Image (cartoon, rainbow over all chains, first blue to last red; front, side):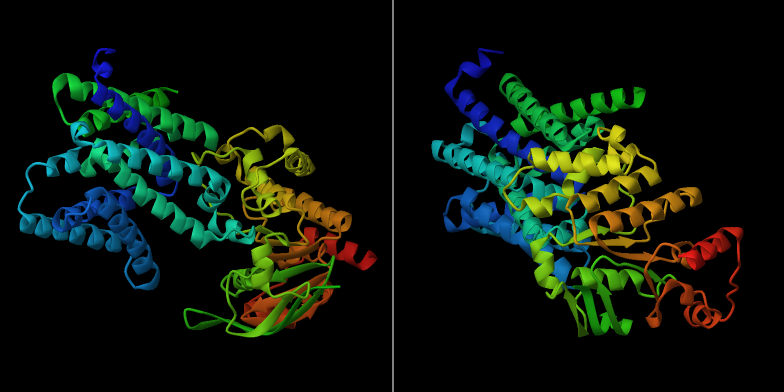
Length: 266
Length: 258
Protein backbone atom coordinates (compact mmCIF):
# COMPACT_ATOMS: atom_id res chain seq x y z
CA UNK A 1 0.00 0.00 0.00
CA UNK A 2 2.88 2.36 0.78
CA UNK A 3 4.30 1.81 -2.69
CA UNK A 4 0.99 2.81 -4.19
CA UNK A 5 1.07 6.12 -2.42
CA UNK A 6 4.76 6.81 -3.13
CA UNK A 7 4.11 7.85 -6.73
CA UNK A 8 4.10 11.68 -6.89
CA UNK A 9 0.73 11.96 -8.63
CA UNK A 10 -0.81 9.66 -6.01
CA UNK A 11 0.54 11.86 -3.24
CA UNK A 12 -1.05 14.85 -4.87
CA UNK A 13 -4.30 12.96 -5.30
CA UNK A 14 -4.16 11.91 -1.68
CA UNK A 15 -3.47 15.46 -0.52
CA UNK A 16 -6.37 16.97 -2.42
CA UNK A 17 -8.55 13.90 -1.74
CA UNK A 18 -8.17 14.14 2.03
CA UNK A 19 -8.84 17.89 2.01
CA UNK A 20 -12.02 17.64 -0.03
CA UNK A 21 -13.25 14.65 1.97
CA UNK A 22 -12.88 16.61 5.20
CA UNK A 23 -15.08 19.24 3.57
CA UNK A 24 -17.55 16.64 2.26
CA UNK A 25 -17.69 14.97 5.68
CA UNK A 26 -18.47 18.28 7.38
CA UNK A 27 -21.09 19.34 4.82
CA UNK A 28 -22.58 15.84 4.86
CA UNK A 29 -23.58 16.19 8.54
CA UNK A 30 -25.87 19.10 7.71
CA UNK A 31 -27.07 17.65 4.41
CA UNK A 32 -28.35 14.67 6.41
CA UNK A 33 -29.75 16.66 9.37
CA UNK A 34 -31.45 19.18 7.08
CA UNK A 35 -32.75 16.41 4.81
CA UNK A 36 -31.10 18.01 1.78
CA UNK A 37 -29.74 14.94 0.03
CA UNK A 38 -31.90 15.49 -3.05
CA UNK A 39 -30.76 19.09 -3.43
CA UNK A 40 -27.17 17.81 -3.10
CA UNK A 41 -27.75 15.33 -5.92
CA UNK A 42 -29.50 18.03 -7.96
CA UNK A 43 -26.69 20.58 -7.66
CA UNK A 44 -24.00 18.02 -8.41
CA UNK A 45 -25.71 16.91 -11.60
CA UNK A 46 -26.27 20.53 -12.53
CA UNK A 47 -22.50 21.05 -12.20
CA UNK A 48 -22.25 19.08 -15.44
CA UNK A 49 -23.87 22.04 -17.20
CA UNK A 50 -21.25 24.30 -15.63
CA UNK A 51 -18.40 22.07 -16.81
CA UNK A 52 -19.85 22.06 -20.33
CA UNK A 53 -19.92 25.87 -20.35
CA UNK A 54 -16.18 25.69 -19.65
CA UNK A 55 -15.62 23.26 -22.51
CA UNK A 56 -17.67 25.38 -24.88
CA UNK A 57 -16.15 28.75 -24.02
CA UNK A 58 -12.61 27.54 -23.47
CA UNK A 59 -12.56 28.80 -19.88
CA UNK A 60 -11.45 26.52 -17.03
CA UNK A 61 -14.39 24.10 -16.46
CA UNK A 62 -13.84 24.05 -12.68
CA UNK A 63 -14.23 27.82 -12.52
CA UNK A 64 -17.32 27.92 -14.74
CA UNK A 65 -18.79 25.01 -12.73
CA UNK A 66 -18.34 26.88 -9.44
CA UNK A 67 -20.27 29.90 -10.69
CA UNK A 68 -22.90 27.82 -12.44
CA UNK A 69 -23.52 25.52 -9.45
CA UNK A 70 -23.82 28.41 -7.02
CA UNK A 71 -26.30 30.08 -9.40
CA UNK A 72 -28.34 26.85 -9.64
CA UNK A 73 -28.34 26.41 -5.86
CA UNK A 74 -29.61 29.95 -5.33
CA UNK A 75 -32.04 29.53 -8.24
CA UNK A 76 -33.60 26.42 -6.67
CA UNK A 77 -33.98 28.24 -3.37
CA UNK A 78 -35.44 31.35 -5.02
CA UNK A 79 -37.95 29.52 -7.21
CA UNK A 80 -39.24 27.35 -4.37
CA UNK A 81 -39.51 30.34 -2.03
CA UNK A 82 -41.09 32.83 -4.43
CA UNK A 83 -42.88 30.69 -6.97
CA UNK A 84 -45.70 28.27 -6.54
CA UNK A 85 -43.37 25.34 -7.22
CA UNK A 86 -42.33 22.87 -4.51
CA UNK A 87 -38.64 22.58 -3.76
CA UNK A 88 -38.73 19.00 -4.95
CA UNK A 89 -40.06 19.96 -8.39
CA UNK A 90 -37.75 22.97 -8.56
CA UNK A 91 -34.70 20.74 -8.00
CA UNK A 92 -35.94 18.28 -10.63
CA UNK A 93 -36.33 21.03 -13.23
CA UNK A 94 -32.98 22.76 -12.61
CA UNK A 95 -31.07 19.52 -12.50
CA UNK A 96 -32.43 17.98 -15.70
CA UNK A 97 -32.31 21.21 -17.69
CA UNK A 98 -28.69 21.77 -16.63
CA UNK A 99 -27.79 18.27 -17.79
CA UNK A 100 -29.56 19.01 -21.09
CA UNK A 101 -27.63 22.27 -21.45
CA UNK A 102 -24.45 20.31 -20.80
CA UNK A 103 -25.26 17.71 -23.46
CA UNK A 104 -26.01 20.43 -26.05
CA UNK A 105 -22.87 22.47 -25.33
CA UNK A 106 -20.61 19.42 -25.28
CA UNK A 107 -22.03 18.16 -28.58
CA UNK A 108 -21.41 21.60 -30.08
CA UNK A 109 -17.86 21.87 -28.80
CA UNK A 110 -16.86 18.56 -30.39
CA UNK A 111 -14.06 17.28 -28.10
CA UNK A 112 -16.07 15.41 -25.53
CA UNK A 113 -14.43 12.04 -25.22
CA UNK A 114 -11.17 12.79 -23.42
CA UNK A 115 -11.80 14.99 -20.41
CA UNK A 116 -15.45 14.39 -19.90
CA UNK A 117 -15.11 10.94 -18.36
CA UNK A 118 -12.82 12.44 -15.74
CA UNK A 119 -15.41 15.02 -14.72
CA UNK A 120 -18.20 12.46 -14.58
CA UNK A 121 -16.41 9.72 -12.65
CA UNK A 122 -13.24 11.33 -11.31
CA UNK A 123 -9.75 11.04 -12.69
CA UNK A 124 -6.77 11.69 -10.46
CA UNK A 125 -4.39 11.72 -13.42
CA UNK A 126 -6.22 14.61 -15.03
CA UNK A 127 -5.85 17.04 -12.13
CA UNK A 128 -3.43 19.86 -12.86
CA UNK A 129 -1.21 21.50 -10.24
CA UNK A 130 -3.27 24.66 -10.52
CA UNK A 131 -6.51 22.78 -9.93
CA UNK A 132 -5.04 21.06 -6.89
CA UNK A 133 -4.07 24.41 -5.39
CA UNK A 134 -7.47 25.86 -6.21
CA UNK A 135 -9.38 22.89 -4.76
CA UNK A 136 -7.36 22.80 -1.56
CA UNK A 137 -7.55 26.55 -1.03
CA UNK A 138 -11.28 26.70 -1.64
CA UNK A 139 -11.91 23.61 0.51
CA UNK A 140 -9.96 25.07 3.43
CA UNK A 141 -11.76 28.38 3.02
CA UNK A 142 -15.20 26.75 3.02
CA UNK A 143 -14.35 24.57 6.04
CA UNK A 144 -13.23 27.73 7.85
CA UNK A 145 -16.44 29.58 7.04
CA UNK A 146 -18.63 26.68 8.16
CA UNK A 147 -16.76 26.32 11.44
CA UNK A 148 -17.03 30.07 11.98
CA UNK A 149 -20.83 29.90 11.65
CA UNK A 150 -21.20 26.39 13.14
CA UNK A 151 -23.32 27.53 16.08
CA UNK A 152 -25.68 29.50 13.83
CA UNK A 153 -25.95 26.71 11.23
CA UNK A 154 -26.64 24.21 14.02
CA UNK A 155 -29.43 26.14 15.76
CA UNK A 156 -31.01 26.93 12.38
CA UNK A 157 -30.97 23.21 11.60
CA UNK A 158 -32.49 22.42 15.01
CA UNK A 159 -35.39 24.88 14.73
CA UNK A 160 -35.62 27.90 12.43
CA UNK A 161 -38.06 29.83 14.63
CA UNK A 162 -35.98 29.46 17.75
CA UNK A 163 -32.97 30.58 15.72
CA UNK A 164 -34.82 33.68 14.52
CA UNK A 165 -35.93 34.59 18.02
CA UNK A 166 -32.27 34.29 19.08
CA UNK A 167 -31.46 37.06 16.59
CA UNK A 168 -29.89 34.79 13.97
CA UNK A 169 -30.34 35.87 10.32
CA UNK A 170 -31.80 32.52 9.30
CA UNK A 171 -32.20 33.21 5.59
CA UNK A 172 -28.62 34.42 5.25
CA UNK A 173 -27.38 31.33 7.08
CA UNK A 174 -29.40 29.03 4.82
CA UNK A 175 -28.06 30.79 1.72
CA UNK A 176 -24.52 30.56 3.06
CA UNK A 177 -24.95 26.83 3.54
CA UNK A 178 -26.33 26.35 0.03
CA UNK A 179 -23.38 28.20 -1.49
CA UNK A 180 -20.97 26.14 0.62
CA UNK A 181 -22.71 22.97 -0.59
CA UNK A 182 -22.42 24.01 -4.26
CA UNK A 183 -18.77 24.96 -3.90
CA UNK A 184 -17.94 21.68 -2.10
CA UNK A 185 -19.47 19.72 -4.94
CA UNK A 186 -17.33 21.44 -7.54
CA UNK A 187 -14.04 21.16 -5.66
CA UNK A 188 -14.58 17.41 -5.18
CA UNK A 189 -15.63 16.90 -8.79
CA UNK A 190 -12.28 15.86 -10.27
CA UNK A 191 -11.60 13.30 -7.55
CA UNK A 192 -14.97 11.64 -7.19
CA UNK A 193 -16.86 12.77 -10.26
CA UNK A 194 -20.13 14.60 -10.78
CA UNK A 195 -22.22 11.43 -10.85
CA UNK A 196 -20.97 10.12 -7.50
CA UNK A 197 -20.18 13.21 -5.45
CA UNK A 198 -23.69 13.36 -4.03
CA UNK A 199 -23.04 9.97 -2.40
CA UNK A 200 -20.15 11.44 -0.43
CA UNK A 201 -22.46 14.21 0.73
CA UNK A 202 -24.93 11.74 2.21
CA UNK A 203 -23.27 8.48 3.25
CA UNK A 204 -20.67 9.84 5.74
CA UNK A 205 -23.29 11.93 7.56
CA UNK A 206 -25.85 9.12 7.55
CA UNK A 207 -23.25 6.68 8.93
CA UNK A 208 -22.22 9.14 11.64
CA UNK A 209 -25.82 9.76 12.65
CA UNK A 210 -26.23 6.09 13.51
CA UNK A 211 -23.97 6.57 16.51
CA UNK A 212 -23.75 10.30 17.21
CA UNK A 213 -24.87 11.63 20.58
CA UNK A 214 -23.77 15.19 19.89
CA UNK A 215 -22.80 17.40 16.98
CA UNK A 216 -19.02 17.30 17.40
CA UNK A 217 -18.98 13.54 17.58
CA UNK A 218 -21.11 13.39 14.45
CA UNK A 219 -18.80 15.76 12.54
CA UNK A 220 -15.69 13.80 13.59
CA UNK A 221 -17.22 10.45 12.60
CA UNK A 222 -18.53 11.78 9.32
CA UNK A 223 -15.15 13.26 8.36
CA UNK A 224 -13.49 10.02 9.42
CA UNK A 225 -15.73 7.94 7.16
CA UNK A 226 -15.19 10.35 4.23
CA UNK A 227 -11.40 10.43 4.61
CA UNK A 228 -11.07 6.67 5.05
CA UNK A 229 -13.29 6.02 2.02
CA UNK A 230 -11.24 8.40 -0.11
CA UNK A 231 -7.91 6.84 0.87
CA UNK A 232 -9.26 3.32 0.30
CA UNK A 233 -10.94 4.37 -2.94
CA UNK A 234 -7.76 5.93 -4.34
CA UNK A 235 -5.83 2.80 -3.42
CA UNK A 236 -8.38 0.60 -5.21
CA UNK A 237 -8.36 2.96 -8.15
CA UNK A 238 -4.60 2.63 -8.55
CA UNK A 239 -4.41 -1.12 -7.93
CA UNK A 240 -7.27 -2.16 -10.18
CA UNK A 241 -7.23 0.72 -12.64
CA UNK A 242 -10.80 1.82 -11.91
CA UNK A 243 -12.24 5.34 -11.71
CA UNK A 244 -11.63 6.61 -8.14
CA UNK A 245 -15.24 7.75 -7.58
CA UNK A 246 -16.51 4.17 -7.77
CA UNK A 247 -13.98 2.86 -5.24
CA UNK A 248 -14.60 5.75 -2.85
CA UNK A 249 -18.38 5.48 -2.85
CA UNK A 250 -18.42 1.68 -2.60
CA UNK A 251 -16.06 1.84 0.39
CA UNK A 252 -18.29 4.44 2.07
CA UNK A 253 -21.36 2.30 1.38
CA UNK A 254 -19.65 -0.73 2.92
CA UNK A 255 -18.84 1.26 6.07
CA UNK A 256 -22.45 2.44 6.25
CA UNK A 257 -23.78 -1.12 5.97
CA UNK A 258 -21.41 -2.36 8.67
CA UNK A 259 -22.54 0.54 10.87
CA UNK A 260 -26.18 -0.28 10.24
CA UNK A 261 -25.56 -3.93 11.16
CA UNK A 262 -23.98 -3.00 14.51
CA UNK A 263 -26.65 -0.41 15.23
CA UNK A 264 -29.41 -2.98 14.69
CA UNK A 265 -27.73 -5.49 16.97
CA UNK A 266 -27.55 -2.98 19.79
CA UNK B 1 -42.80 50.00 32.37
CA UNK B 2 -45.03 48.52 29.69
CA UNK B 3 -43.60 45.26 28.39
CA UNK B 4 -46.05 44.86 25.53
CA UNK B 5 -48.31 47.44 23.88
CA UNK B 6 -50.52 46.29 21.03
CA UNK B 7 -52.72 48.78 19.27
CA UNK B 8 -55.51 47.87 16.85
CA UNK B 9 -53.59 44.94 15.42
CA UNK B 10 -54.86 43.05 12.37
CA UNK B 11 -52.95 40.10 10.95
CA UNK B 12 -53.70 38.30 7.70
CA UNK B 13 -52.55 34.77 6.92
CA UNK B 14 -52.98 33.72 3.29
CA UNK B 15 -55.56 36.46 2.79
CA UNK B 16 -57.65 35.38 5.79
CA UNK B 17 -57.93 37.66 8.80
CA UNK B 18 -56.42 35.58 11.56
CA UNK B 19 -56.46 38.41 14.07
CA UNK B 20 -58.88 41.28 13.95
CA UNK B 21 -58.35 44.66 15.68
CA UNK B 22 -56.60 43.53 18.81
CA UNK B 23 -55.41 45.90 21.50
CA UNK B 24 -53.53 44.93 24.62
CA UNK B 25 -51.15 46.40 27.15
CA UNK B 26 -49.17 44.34 29.59
CA UNK B 27 -47.02 45.70 32.41
CA UNK B 28 -43.56 44.34 33.00
CA UNK B 29 -43.56 41.36 35.33
CA UNK B 30 -47.15 40.32 34.68
CA UNK B 31 -48.37 36.88 33.70
CA UNK B 32 -50.94 36.89 30.89
CA UNK B 33 -52.83 33.81 29.82
CA UNK B 34 -54.32 33.73 26.32
CA UNK B 35 -57.11 31.20 26.00
CA UNK B 36 -59.41 30.26 23.17
CA UNK B 37 -60.28 27.47 20.77
CA UNK B 38 -57.78 25.91 18.39
CA UNK B 39 -57.51 27.96 15.22
CA UNK B 40 -58.60 31.07 17.13
CA UNK B 41 -55.30 32.85 16.52
CA UNK B 42 -53.33 32.23 19.73
CA UNK B 43 -50.18 31.06 17.98
CA UNK B 44 -50.50 33.83 15.36
CA UNK B 45 -50.68 36.44 18.11
CA UNK B 46 -47.60 35.07 19.85
CA UNK B 47 -45.65 34.89 16.58
CA UNK B 48 -46.62 38.46 15.70
CA UNK B 49 -45.45 39.70 19.09
CA UNK B 50 -42.16 37.86 18.48
CA UNK B 51 -41.77 39.67 15.15
CA UNK B 52 -41.99 36.45 13.12
CA UNK B 53 -45.15 37.63 11.30
CA UNK B 54 -45.66 41.13 9.89
CA UNK B 55 -49.04 42.63 10.81
CA UNK B 56 -51.39 43.92 8.10
CA UNK B 57 -52.20 46.99 10.20
CA UNK B 58 -51.88 48.29 13.74
CA UNK B 59 -48.78 48.56 15.89
CA UNK B 60 -46.83 46.57 18.44
CA UNK B 61 -44.23 47.88 20.84
CA UNK B 62 -42.03 45.66 22.97
CA UNK B 63 -40.47 47.68 25.81
CA UNK B 64 -41.06 50.68 23.54
CA UNK B 65 -39.34 49.15 20.49
CA UNK B 66 -40.65 47.66 17.25
CA UNK B 67 -40.66 43.83 17.07
CA UNK B 68 -38.20 43.68 14.11
CA UNK B 69 -35.64 45.60 16.15
CA UNK B 70 -36.21 43.37 19.15
CA UNK B 71 -35.94 40.25 16.99
CA UNK B 72 -32.54 41.33 15.62
CA UNK B 73 -31.15 41.87 19.11
CA UNK B 74 -32.04 38.27 20.02
CA UNK B 75 -32.03 39.09 23.73
CA UNK B 76 -35.54 39.98 24.78
CA UNK B 77 -37.58 36.84 24.25
CA UNK B 78 -37.46 33.33 25.54
CA UNK B 79 -39.69 31.29 23.25
CA UNK B 80 -41.21 27.87 23.61
CA UNK B 81 -42.99 26.93 20.37
CA UNK B 82 -45.79 24.38 20.35
CA UNK B 83 -44.29 20.95 20.83
CA UNK B 84 -42.47 20.04 17.65
CA UNK B 85 -41.45 16.44 17.43
CA UNK B 86 -37.71 16.43 17.01
CA UNK B 87 -36.25 13.39 15.32
CA UNK B 88 -35.01 11.02 18.07
CA UNK B 89 -31.62 10.65 16.40
CA UNK B 90 -30.92 14.39 16.08
CA UNK B 91 -27.45 14.61 17.64
CA UNK B 92 -28.09 16.96 20.51
CA UNK B 93 -27.77 16.44 24.25
CA UNK B 94 -29.98 18.14 26.81
CA UNK B 95 -27.18 20.52 27.79
CA UNK B 96 -26.65 21.45 24.11
CA UNK B 97 -30.34 22.35 23.76
CA UNK B 98 -30.23 24.57 26.85
CA UNK B 99 -27.01 26.16 25.62
CA UNK B 100 -28.83 27.20 22.42
CA UNK B 101 -30.86 29.52 24.62
CA UNK B 102 -27.63 31.45 25.28
CA UNK B 103 -26.80 32.00 21.59
CA UNK B 104 -28.75 35.26 21.37
CA UNK B 105 -26.73 36.67 24.28
CA UNK B 106 -23.42 35.40 22.97
CA UNK B 107 -23.80 36.90 19.52
CA UNK B 108 -22.10 35.74 16.33
CA UNK B 109 -18.53 34.37 16.21
CA UNK B 110 -18.49 33.68 19.94
CA UNK B 111 -18.37 30.32 21.65
CA UNK B 112 -20.06 29.33 24.90
CA UNK B 113 -17.87 30.22 27.85
CA UNK B 114 -17.81 29.25 31.52
CA UNK B 115 -20.58 31.72 32.36
CA UNK B 116 -22.86 30.28 29.69
CA UNK B 117 -22.27 26.78 31.00
CA UNK B 118 -22.99 27.82 34.57
CA UNK B 119 -26.22 29.53 33.52
CA UNK B 120 -27.32 26.54 31.44
CA UNK B 121 -26.74 24.17 34.37
CA UNK B 122 -28.47 26.57 36.75
CA UNK B 123 -31.69 26.51 34.69
CA UNK B 124 -31.47 22.77 34.19
CA UNK B 125 -31.38 22.22 37.93
CA UNK B 126 -34.17 24.75 38.41
CA UNK B 127 -36.27 22.57 36.10
CA UNK B 128 -35.21 19.51 38.11
CA UNK B 129 -33.47 17.70 35.28
CA UNK B 130 -29.81 18.46 35.92
CA UNK B 131 -29.02 14.74 36.06
CA UNK B 132 -30.27 14.31 32.49
CA UNK B 133 -27.86 16.89 31.08
CA UNK B 134 -25.77 14.47 29.03
CA UNK B 135 -28.72 12.45 27.73
CA UNK B 136 -29.60 12.67 24.03
CA UNK B 137 -32.55 15.07 23.86
CA UNK B 138 -34.51 12.72 21.58
CA UNK B 139 -34.49 9.94 24.20
CA UNK B 140 -36.32 12.03 26.81
CA UNK B 141 -40.04 11.69 27.53
CA UNK B 142 -42.38 14.44 26.29
CA UNK B 143 -42.54 16.06 29.73
CA UNK B 144 -38.77 15.96 30.18
CA UNK B 145 -38.23 17.46 26.71
CA UNK B 146 -40.64 20.22 27.63
CA UNK B 147 -38.71 20.98 30.82
CA UNK B 148 -35.42 21.04 28.92
CA UNK B 149 -36.97 23.38 26.34
CA UNK B 150 -38.19 25.73 29.06
CA UNK B 151 -34.70 25.73 30.53
CA UNK B 152 -33.51 26.70 27.04
CA UNK B 153 -36.06 29.52 26.81
CA UNK B 154 -34.98 30.81 30.23
CA UNK B 155 -31.24 30.39 29.69
CA UNK B 156 -31.03 33.60 27.69
CA UNK B 157 -32.35 35.50 30.74
CA UNK B 158 -35.21 36.96 28.70
CA UNK B 159 -37.38 39.92 29.66
CA UNK B 160 -40.42 38.23 28.18
CA UNK B 161 -41.14 34.52 28.19
CA UNK B 162 -43.52 33.33 25.46
CA UNK B 163 -45.03 29.88 25.85
CA UNK B 164 -47.27 28.27 23.24
CA UNK B 165 -49.37 25.48 24.77
CA UNK B 166 -46.58 24.44 27.12
CA UNK B 167 -48.64 21.78 28.85
CA UNK B 168 -48.85 19.58 25.77
CA UNK B 169 -47.19 16.29 26.61
CA UNK B 170 -47.25 16.90 30.33
CA UNK B 171 -49.74 14.85 32.33
CA UNK B 172 -52.45 16.54 34.39
CA UNK B 173 -50.68 16.10 37.71
CA UNK B 174 -47.49 17.48 36.18
CA UNK B 175 -49.37 20.54 34.94
CA UNK B 176 -50.11 21.83 38.43
CA UNK B 177 -46.43 21.66 39.33
CA UNK B 178 -45.60 23.26 36.03
CA UNK B 179 -47.83 26.30 36.58
CA UNK B 180 -46.45 26.64 40.11
CA UNK B 181 -42.98 26.67 38.67
CA UNK B 182 -43.87 29.39 36.14
CA UNK B 183 -45.41 31.48 38.91
CA UNK B 184 -42.21 31.09 40.91
CA UNK B 185 -40.06 32.15 37.94
CA UNK B 186 -42.26 35.18 37.35
CA UNK B 187 -41.87 36.33 40.95
CA UNK B 188 -38.19 35.53 41.22
CA UNK B 189 -36.99 37.22 38.02
CA UNK B 190 -39.79 39.77 37.52
CA UNK B 191 -40.20 38.16 34.12
CA UNK B 192 -43.18 38.98 31.90
CA UNK B 193 -44.97 35.84 30.75
CA UNK B 194 -47.29 35.37 27.80
CA UNK B 195 -48.81 31.92 27.67
CA UNK B 196 -51.28 30.46 25.20
CA UNK B 197 -53.44 27.62 26.41
CA UNK B 198 -56.76 26.03 25.54
CA UNK B 199 -57.23 25.02 29.14
CA UNK B 200 -59.12 27.93 30.65
CA UNK B 201 -59.95 26.15 33.89
CA UNK B 202 -56.43 25.19 34.86
CA UNK B 203 -54.63 28.47 34.29
CA UNK B 204 -57.03 30.92 35.92
CA UNK B 205 -55.51 30.32 39.33
CA UNK B 206 -52.02 31.25 38.23
CA UNK B 207 -52.21 34.10 35.71
CA UNK B 208 -52.56 37.80 36.61
CA UNK B 209 -54.64 38.60 33.57
CA UNK B 210 -56.47 36.61 30.98
CA UNK B 211 -57.40 37.35 27.38
CA UNK B 212 -59.94 35.24 25.54
CA UNK B 213 -59.08 35.08 21.87
CA UNK B 214 -61.12 33.82 18.96
CA UNK B 215 -60.14 36.02 16.01
CA UNK B 216 -60.57 39.02 18.30
CA UNK B 217 -60.54 39.46 22.07
CA UNK B 218 -63.82 38.44 23.68
CA UNK B 219 -62.64 39.22 27.17
CA UNK B 220 -59.66 40.87 28.78
CA UNK B 221 -59.09 41.32 32.45
CA UNK B 222 -58.97 39.45 35.71
CA UNK B 223 -59.04 35.65 35.52
CA UNK B 224 -62.19 35.24 37.63
CA UNK B 225 -64.31 37.19 35.15
CA UNK B 226 -63.30 34.89 32.31
CA UNK B 227 -65.17 31.98 33.84
CA UNK B 228 -68.42 33.82 33.21
CA UNK B 229 -70.87 31.91 31.04
CA UNK B 230 -71.46 34.64 28.43
CA UNK B 231 -67.74 35.08 27.89
CA UNK B 232 -67.30 31.37 27.35
CA UNK B 233 -70.25 31.21 24.98
CA UNK B 234 -68.77 34.05 22.96
CA UNK B 235 -65.47 32.32 22.85
CA UNK B 236 -66.28 28.67 22.27
CA UNK B 237 -69.85 28.77 20.94
CA UNK B 238 -73.21 27.96 22.46
CA UNK B 239 -72.75 24.42 23.67
CA UNK B 240 -70.27 24.96 26.42
CA UNK B 241 -70.90 23.69 29.91
CA UNK B 242 -68.68 24.99 32.62
CA UNK B 243 -68.12 21.85 34.62
CA UNK B 244 -67.09 22.48 38.18
CA UNK B 245 -64.66 19.63 38.76
CA UNK B 246 -63.39 19.43 42.30
CA UNK B 247 -60.09 20.42 40.78
CA UNK B 248 -61.40 23.69 39.37
CA UNK B 249 -63.35 24.57 42.49
CA UNK B 250 -60.25 24.14 44.55
CA UNK B 251 -58.69 26.76 42.34
CA UNK B 252 -61.75 29.00 42.63
CA UNK B 253 -61.34 28.81 46.38
CA UNK B 254 -57.73 29.75 46.11
CA UNK B 255 -58.72 32.68 43.87
CA UNK B 256 -61.25 33.95 46.34
CA UNK B 257 -58.70 33.83 49.13
CA UNK B 258 -56.09 35.86 47.24
